[in-house]
Length: 454
Ligand code: NOJ
Image 1 (cartoon, protein in one colour):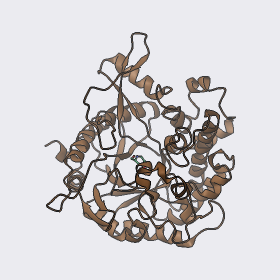
Image 2 (cartoon, rainbow, N blue to C red):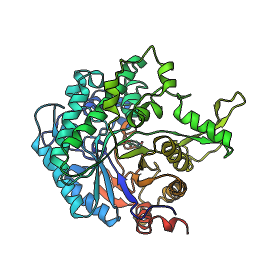
Image 3 (cartoon, protein in one colour):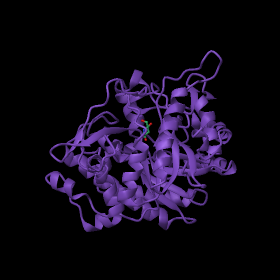
Image 4 (cartoon, protein in one colour):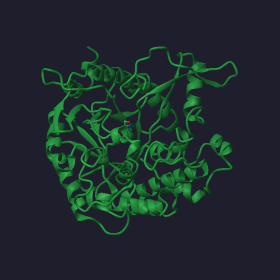
C-alpha cells in the first residue's frame, strides 16, 4: 500500500445528522429544522432529525467509541444556529460550551479534530432574508468563521469551510429534493453558488485572521467521477473532459470545475461561462480574489463514478452500466475505481494535497441473532475502494481518508432508512454497536492499510 506514514485515518459525521437536541441549549432554527416540520412527507416515513443519535448528550460515549476503534481523526461539523441562533449577532454561549467540551474530549483522547463550518444548517433567520441569494451572505458567514476561529482554533488546527455545495445549492434549490425543496431557475442557483463560493473565501480570510495557531484550511465539495471505460489514452482523456466539463446529466450543479476552478485556479471555467452567459450573476475580479484565497488542503467527498469512453465524434460518451451491476442500499453503484481516477484527475488539475473527506456505503444492516452486526459487504466495499486510493497515492499527494460515517444517522430526505455507519445505532434505545466493519477498519488504521493486501 502507498499510504504515507502520517496518513490521516478518520471517520466523519455532521451536526444535524447526529446531534439531536434541536430545541435545546439555546439553539436557533435552521432550514432543515423548519422544513422537516412543514414538509416532512418529503422525507422517508416522515422522519426528523430532532433526536437522531442524541450525540449532543452522548458525545463522551461517542468519543470513547472513536478511541476504541483507533480513529486518528474525526471530521465533524458545527451547527451555525447552535452558536449564533439567528445566524448573525448574539452568540449562544451554551452552544459554544457544547463544542468546547466535544473538542476537549477529542484532544484528551488523541483524536485530531477536523471541523467543517457548514454542513447545510442554514440559519432560518438568514434564509428569510434571502439566504444564499442575499449579497450579504459572505459577510454573515465571515463573522461566523471569525467566531469559530476565536473560540476553537486554539485546539482545532484543521478546518473545512463548506461541505458539498453541489447539494446545498443543487439538490435543495435546483432539483428540489432537499430542504427547502425548491426548483429555481439557473439564474438564481448560479447566484447562490457565487455567493456560497465568496462565503468560502471570506471564511478562509477570517479563519486566518483570527487563528490562534497556524491552521490547515480547505473546502469539501463532492463529485461523481468519470471513469474511463478502458485505460486507452483516448478513453482516459474522454473521462477527464467529462469530469471537468458541463454535466451531461442532472443539473449544472453536478459540476467539478465550476466549484473548484475559482477556488484553486482563480477563475471560473470558460466553457461554463460561455454556455451559461445569459444566466450568470455579475462576477468581478474582486469576487474572484476573495474566492481564491489560498487553501492548504483540498477535500473531496467521493462515493461513485460513471463510465465514459471517447465517442466516434471525438466527444466524451456516457455509457450505460453493466446489467446487474453491484449497488448499495441507496442504489448507488459500487465503482471502486473512482478512488483512483477521482484523486488522480483532481491532483493533475489542482495540485493540492487531497483528503477524501467522505466515502462509505449504505447497507441493509441489522443486529444478527448473535447480537453483532455483520456487514461484510461494507468491508469488501471499503477494501476495494482503499486499494484504488492506494494506487492513486502512488501518483498524487493524498493525505487522509474519512469513512462516512462514524455511526448510522439521519440521511436527509432518506431519514433513518439508510445506514452508513461503522457503528450501528438502535434509534429506539440509542444503543451503539460497532459493526464488523468498525473492527476491520481499526485493523486498517493500525496497519496503515497493509492488512488489506492479505
Ligand atoms: C454526503 C453528505 O455530505 C452527507 O451528509 C451524506 O450523509 C452522505 N453524502 C451520504 O449520502
